Length: 294
Image 1: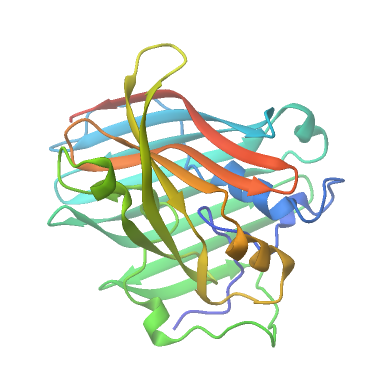
Image 2: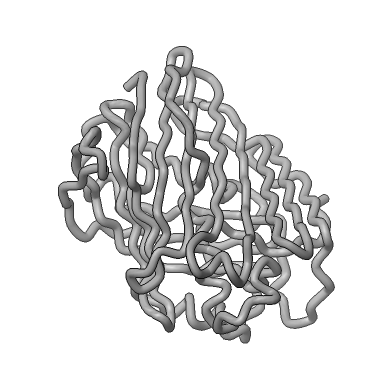
């Protein structure tokens, strides 16, 4: 049975963000900034070929209202029977004066008929004064175990998690890898609902196709198409409905994910993620993007 957990979403709002606890930044924007720094997934490296599969490596810049605030990266290997996704995100520039928080995450699982089935998820967040960790274990498509350090106190206003909320959801890292038919159009790739469990919260991310745009990396090594998906945040359980950040994100219509197909593999990953905040858009966008095996 899962233990009491503290929220640590990479792809959704973060109700309590310890990494920014000592910062002078607006308390209302702290959760969005943390989500923006970590939402891209994250680990930069070269992309060696995966056996009978694909490998991806990407670096991202993180901006708030056009000002650079962080760096991130993504490394994913999807083989014939297994996958591994890992990453990091950190603040940089002026924001690093207030907090040098850095997050690292990893997810492993099986590839079954082309679909990803999570087995393990780990997330670590550190800054000058404290550290926290979330570990989720899955079994047969169900959240089987959750370990949170330090534990989140019991909150009477938190919506209870039921058994159904632990079934059929992705962890935040696995949710970044979108499966579709090779050569699918933008509407097919975007129009879906992504179920996510992040340690405490179970929420849905409905995506709706908006348009297709051309993108290129800063070094010109990658040129391709990105499918722009409008997104919404729909909490189902584990959240506290009266929290300001929850209400703000539920009403937030300024959420977008740009998905780029990895060659002809039948998988897409985020090129850009945009989150509306009270200080302007928080944007994660790829600077470099390389893959092999597709």
